[in-house]
Length: 268
Image (cartoon, rainbow, N blue to C red; front, side, top):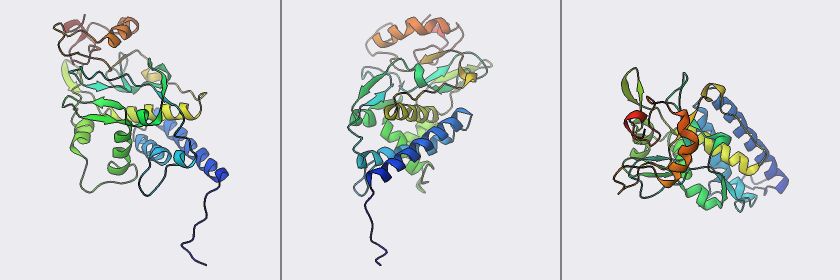
């Protein structure tokens, strides 16, 4: 028998693979929520298996012709007039022991709409202060192909991605014990939110709750400062968000606009 001969997958077998991959996603989400932030790499590997097509391989969604589905988009939209950095899939905890840490949005996302796959996969979710843009695809493939999800590139990490994950290229700071310091890596909670969106795309009844230690109030990071506005006011989007969020921000908390200043010295 020719050992190189292959037998095409049946639809039922492909559906079994989908069931397995969804199970992997849910399991890694649970582990992440219990404090294992490194699970973001396993999440990325599963998302790549489900969604990423190359010249030599098809994704599981492609095999099952599921790319025509509408995907849940929870990201705050990026305004190209924005002169600040942008992080559309995460928020920052306000108050409590974990104040000033990044958190995924889960079902509390203020933006929920269904969009086509290409717009979802390639849409902007990060823009750093150097104006490097990152899509969901960029984050998933960097985590998987470069940063240990399925491979560790001996050449290291691409500079924009390394700056994002290691050198705070978003420029977001927090005050701790009277000293301003960078907020840690925002890629893990972003990957967690990408997984959340995908799970809800596959099963609209899927739901999760942010870990209880983070349920202390949040401010979002989309919108921010618009070029040409003399008073550095929030964008129209952030003004609307502020009506529901500002009552959770104290005078000494980081300002919701992403400037890195305390609220009392910025937009109060």
